[in-house]
Length: 402
Image (cartoon, rainbow, N blue to C red; front, side):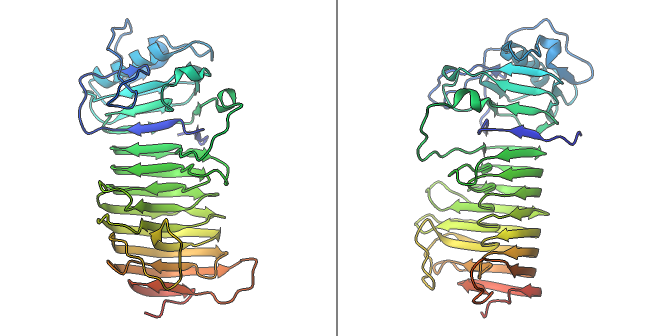
């Protein structure tokens, strides 16, 4: 794979992978539909292109034109339908070198071709600039695709500079990527960028999903670089550089009654640069009860991070030292291992758990952090409340006095 990074700008991707099969597959236009948020697969159409025997479906073979002028939605639709439905071997939809323009588009399944189905982007996709094209904010959307692999050295250009003008955006809650109801999806070599002072611009939010892998990516935002929400399992994140941002977080959890357990999150070999948090687990005080368990943060580097290691079960409220949280979420089997670097906080290890459901089986091992804050160092300590934790190996700051 080429070393250039695939760039996703201005929240262009919302991936909604429903567990309920749809009747048809297609790469569709945007149409209003009350049950799916305005996204409907297009009616399948026939194409004169011959189904390749190699399993590679080049969009140019289906009529796509790389002139950055032609709307290529029909060609992309035909290529996707062939790859999704008509391949005898695992298929690759190829967007080759060149600049291909398209409006809001939908890759829809379920697919009958053997898994995995790969979308490889080595060229550039550019968005149309007419805001009336966008009934809902998504541009490129994947729906009901099991075993999707998205890769390549290309560029997704959302053309935000062309369409965002003379607008005041107030209290926006926009994620760059939002995965909901997804399974078996891998992301590699992403670059996600937003100003550090832009609220709620999570690089990636994952909810109701499983077997998600994020690797070798650079994410800088005004909120969590990656946030893992409720009802998720088997999430792997490695080789991510985070900053600016709020760290890589499990949560926030416990805000809505439909939330279910988080089980199996592994974050490793990541670097945090001037982030407000590093490895974080956060739950609301409230009446929603579920579990967050089997979570590993290991082999991390902190560079000027605030709150490098934090469990916060009073999220969303005013933090008051020595006042216990009453969150009903149970946090257990959590490991913070081999974390080193620098922190601007006097309390770089903070385990603030619930009095209703104390944290259990929390491990802090081989943590070596040093203070680089601007204010006088009044003590470099760990703080634990309602946390059944064990400490081992080299520790700086020292372990909590449990």
